[in-house]
Length: 461
Image 1 (cartoon, one colour):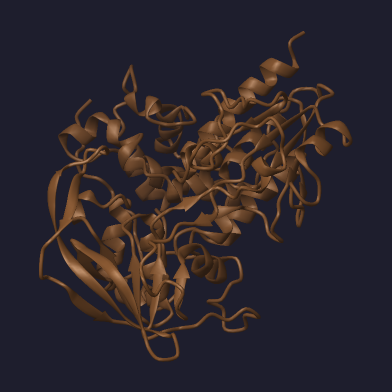
Image 2 (cartoon, rainbow, N blue to C red):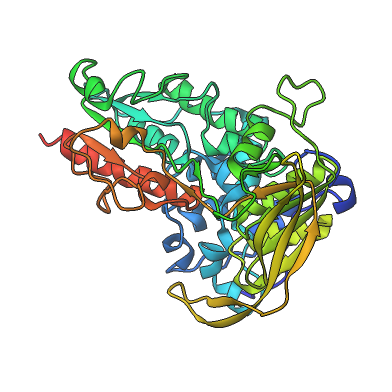
C-alpha cells in the first residue's frame, strides 16, 4: 500500500474569533475528511499504536471501520476498551502515545487517531445514540467508586460490563471530576462530559453527588456497614501547589485550581452566571503545562492581556504541542526562560505586578531536561493585576487520613501496586491519587487495571 504522508487537518475556529468566545476550538472533521484521513492507515500487521494506548484500544480496527464509513461501528469498537472516546479524542496526548508510534510518523505525519476517535464518538452520539454496552450477568458483588473523574469513570464502565453493581460517590455537586472543573469548555465541552456519564448511567452505574467520603461516610463504613465488597479510590490530585515566594497571599493571586473551577464548574464565562469571576486587565500565569495553557487561554477569553511565564524554553515545555500552538495563535504572550521572584502588591495588598529574573539552561536534571539557572543582574518587572499559579497539584489528604491501614507516600499519594491494590484489603486506587498529576488516559488505564484486580480477587471461584 502506498503511503499517504499528507495529514488531513482538523478544522478549527479562526484564532482571532475563538480568543473571544468559549466555544470549542476544533470544529471536527466532515464525513469525507474522516474517511480520507482514516484511509491513510497502513493497517500494520504488528500495530505499534495499540501498545502506545494505555487502555489498549484496537486502533487499526476502529480506523478501518471509519475508512469504510461505518462510523457508529467504529465508535462501538473503541468502547470495547474505552468508556470515554469523545473525551479522549479531545484531550489525550496522542502525539506522545498512539500517534507517536505510528509508522507514518517516522516518514511524515502520523494518522490523526485522536481526531478520528473524536469524530466517530461524536457521530454515534448525534446520529445513532448510545447503545447500552454488552453486560455479563450480575455477579452479586457491589463496588463503591470514589470520585467521578477519568480513573473512576473508566473503572465504573469496566465494572458494570463485568456484572458488578457500581455506585460512584462524588464530593461535588456535578459529576466528571477534573473533566468538569479543570478542563475549559473551549477544549472539552461539558455537554460531552455529561453525555459520556449518561452512557454509564444507562448501563446501570449509580451516581451519588454531594457525598464526601471521609466525612459523609468513611471507606470502612462503606465496606462494613453498607456492604460493599470493594472500594476503588479515584479522587485525583486536586490540591494546588504554590511557589512560596513573597506576595503569594495577595489579593488577585489564584491557584489554577480555583481559577479554572470558577470558570468551568461554576460557568463563570456565562453572562447569567451566579458565580462571577474577577476579570483583570493583565494576567500572568506561571507554569508550562496543559493547566497553565488552560488558565492563560481562559483569562484571554475574559478579556485580559494574558502572559505565560515559564522558567525553561519552549522545547522543554510539558504542555501538548497543540495546546501551545493554539495559545500562541490566540495571542498569549510567552515569557520563556523567566522565573518569578516576587508578586508585587500595592498598599492595599492587591497585585500590581511581578518581579522576575531571566534564566539560562544548564546541565540536565533528573528528568532529563536541562536545569534552568538565574542570569545575574537580569531582574525585571511585569505589570499585571492578577497571577495564576499553575505549577502542579497534590492529592487531598482526607481519604488517607480517615482510612486506617492505607499506606501513603511522602508526596501524599496513596501507595498502590501496578495492579491497583493498596495495602488495605478490599481497597484499590488509581489515577492521580496514586501517581500524582498526570493525564486523563493514564488515569483511565489505571482504572482498568484496578478492575482486573477486583475481578480476580472477588470472583476467585
